[in-house]
Image 1: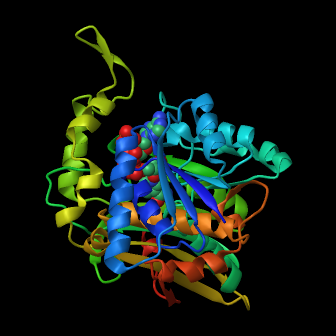
Image 2 (image 1 turned 60 degrees about the vertical axis):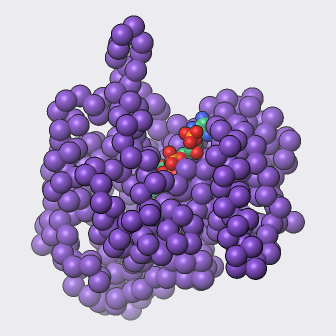
Image 3 (image 1 turned 45 degrees about the vertical axis):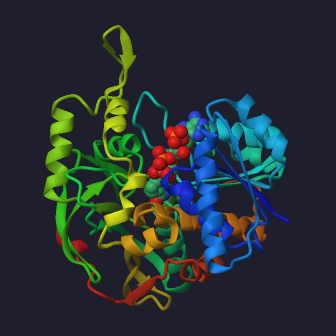
Length: 411
Ligand code: NDP
């Protein structure tokens, strides 16, 4: 018997809920809790309809409401349901309150994004790593960053280190969305979180220190499998911080994401006219945050799925020395179709590629494979059982041994 509480039923939470329900032998009891209970009811009803359509066995599914900014409210929820694990699929702002509530109520924890304070767009693990001793002493496990990137990107890197490399030297995480949702401008996950991330300075690891670049300053054309060439921009992404610590032979680590010209033009205008600001302004005597207001008028990422065509392709390109000390390159990736993801869960591939790994991480914990008291990033666990589940749960991966990596042309 394993009971999980899923907090947040946006794009990612909805996918994770569907996938947990598809594995009723592991997830025997699921509680969906979010700011608005009605939203959880809608997701539960869709899951029940899907299960009936396919004649599938269902776990027990309950719904509830919670304000995840309040430790007290969270503790009331956790005491009412008494789960083994909380899957935090709300927003990065709630990571610490949910971790505090987990400690208070003796529940393990999993999330897909590092904590961010609301008033400064700053990405680092220090706030959550500060909980290591507390989780260890309580005998509880916290699994950080278990989406796709962060998440599968770290598992792919750990898999490469375990099976192919004696020493990894360079790591380039490459994230391509070659999909088309037909809207002039929309973000693929929570717009506030997404725009905060993209408008930051870029940053990468080189020879033992961080090098800072202007936002989207460095870019190059990379070729993605079954997609072709796409302009790819260097961003800072949180998993770089833990990966260079956990694999200290890596001398250069970078993260690349593709953007179309239309998207970048909109983004530039949004910034130029002040709509990306995250500080409060006075509007007719009321305090508003421009980026939060923008979120309210942009398309909801959860509604993009219906006519979304094309695929995502996310992977790791690694170079270094193979197990016998020979020079080696390696590229491991997953391609995911927006329309297939939509058919299965009602959500597009960006939510799907995050929600599925979150479910697998929870499965790893509940089946005892990733149960290690303390606070851990995904690459600290054995990658093999997770890699086995990825194709079974809808995210098949492929690998190229010794391919050209393209990334060195930018040195
Ligand atoms: P959404 O905005 O679609 O969903 C967030 C959900 O959390 C909503 O249901 C929202 O409720 C709920 N929520 C927000 N605040 C609270 C609160 N105070 N109390 C209770 N519930 C709350 O976001 P996404 O699904 O797109 O993203 C979810 C998470 O996944 C984010 O942290 C994001 O950064 C992360 N992510 C990670 C990726 C990865 O690869 N690692 C990729 C993509 C996303 P309401 O609907 O009422 O607002």
